[in-house]
Structures are given as structure tokens and as C-alpha cells.
Image (tube, rainbow, N blue to C red; front, side, top):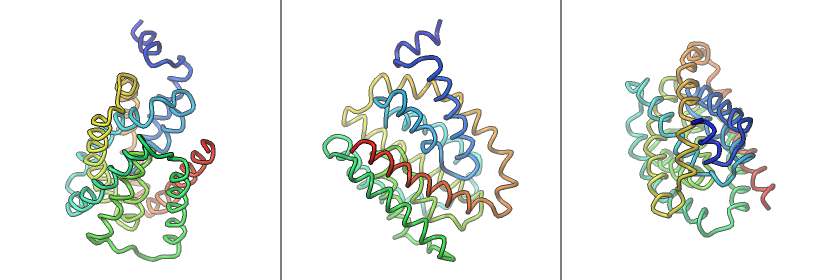
Length: 251
């Protein structure tokens, strides 16, 4: 009875909810393993069945995911990233809100996606990416724009930390995304872009996220033996393509 009431409230079928729930589980499994990826996987599935729930539901859903990722390996967090990525994210959130409320976002989505793909290609040829205050702020800015306007804000910071150890990537991205997600949520609330639909669908998917986060710990040992950077680059490339395709479809 409760599930039927929930499905009626959010306006989706039981089949659609199962698919979205499975995507939330898989996305949390990926993000819990390499530091990002939840919204990359769950957002397209939500968009398929209930596009009106975006970006709000995905941002609500990301809160327990980022909190769990940060808390699990907190000792490895790069503290400087929390300050500078957050400072960079603030103006990015402002632009993201402007995109959501005023600007036609499709053309910008194409530009953002193409930029991410270009960064992946450059990263493949580059042995290192300098982690500085400026690069942390720049990654935070791009993540703020992308995360607030499209719900997919992980690639910039993930690319910056791609050469770091697994625990550093996962915990630093988790902590930075927790702060950034909370700021994006507050901004969307202030702009009137978060409603009952977003809260209901987001909270309904939290169990799937928690299960995926729990299961991801079993992949850490394998990924931390040299596989985390290739996974980061592949997923960033997929994220860029997803944003580009989404923009093309909506044009």
C-alpha cells in the first residue's frame, strides 16, 4: 500500500521505479568504488521516466551518498580541496541556477560535455595534473556549473585527482561533493526549484544508494591496485558524452 501511494505521488509505474532503484544501487556501487558516478548512472534513467524530477531528486539522493563516502575514509581527505573547491563552486552554482531558471541549457550542455571529453583526451597524454589551489578552485567551479544545471558534477574534480591513491580520491571527492551538493540544494530551494516530487523520489531511492555504498567496499582492494585511474578516465569520458547527447536530444 505504501509503495502504491509513493508511485502514485511521484507519477511512475512499478517497473520504472524498479529500474530507477537499480540504477541508484549501481551508481552508488560505482561512486563508492572510485569516488563519483552516482548521478551519471541514475540521472539518465530518471530522465527517461520522470524528467520533471531533475535535477532536484538527484541532488537530494546524492546527500547520503557523499556523506557515506567522506565518513568512511575521512583520514585520507585532502583538506585543502574542501576549502578551494568549495570557494570555486560558489560562483559555479550561481551560473548553474541561472541556467536552470533562465537560460536555454542545451547549448551550454554541449559545451560542457565537449570540455570534459577534451580534458579526458588531454589527461591520457599527460603524466600528471598539478593539484594547486587554483586547479582545485577551477574544478570546483566547473563542478558547480555542471552539478547544479545537469546533476552531473563529478568529472572536473575526479580528473584533477585521477593520479591520487584510491582512498584519497574517494574520500576527498566525497567530502567536496557533500559540501557542494548541500550548497546546490540550498540554492535550488531558494530558487523554488525543489518540490514534493523531488523529496519523495529522492528519499525513496536512498535504500538503494546505501546498499550500493555498502557493497562498494568489496571492490576497493582490486581498484586500488592500479585500476582506479583508468576507471576514472572512462567514466569521465562517458559523463561528457552523456551531457553532450542530452544536450543534442533537447535541441
